[in-house]
Length: 280
Image 1 (cartoon, rainbow, N blue to C red):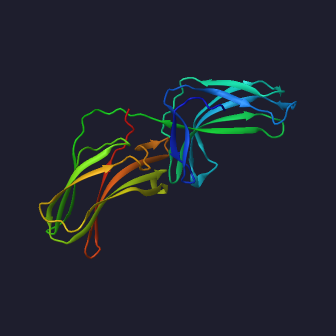
Image 2: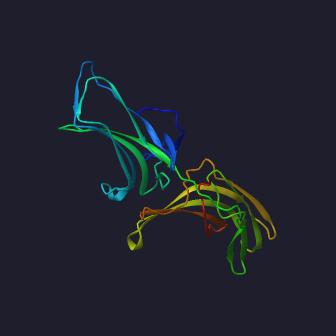
Image 3: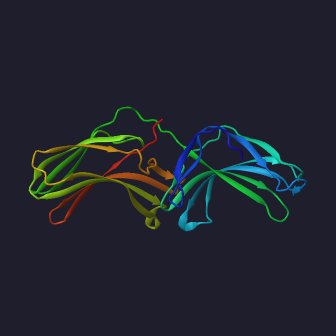
């Protein structure tokens, strides 16, 4: 498949390494050229037809072989016959609906790809090319400050206030931590962004959490009335948008986890869900 001047994006592969693929959005046309090169001059390649498919697929890792195709489009490129020279075939999938974001998770992946098949009597020749799809969400500008309290009766009261409840993937979480009451000796404080992935539903659902970013907020003992400004930069971390019941298979959400550690290494924490839509 030819490499035209499309935009590209990166996604983490199954091996954990970043992969670069062509980028498309919902409703965009996918078009290009399939180039078939014969291995030797004067060679003939007999075939029963050549086709290209555009596929959107969800695969659960612990149930491999049971993929769910939520998109499957096919175009015939050539009728049965033979190729006697290198050949090129143009294809176009017009205004294709792509309802979900590409995703590579802990137990599940959602991928879009093109598959070319040269049908032969004995063994088909197949090649695949992955694509990345980004979906855009539209939200009103209005948002509200959120407040998260951590407390132990008569010992500790901390308020964590941050500026909104939803952020885009390159955003900055801005907030402030207030120490209202401090009667225990705190030596360390951190905020962790946790990705929570749920595959399936009910008692058989597989739930995994992955700490994707950690920020050290304080190293030392605070005093009553003290406040600490917070700026957490989301760019550069392995984040995907918040996803709800995708294909009735999986969901992804994010938690802000505020953790305090006292001098006896006891840990106190509080979690708050926040949204990571891909803002258009």
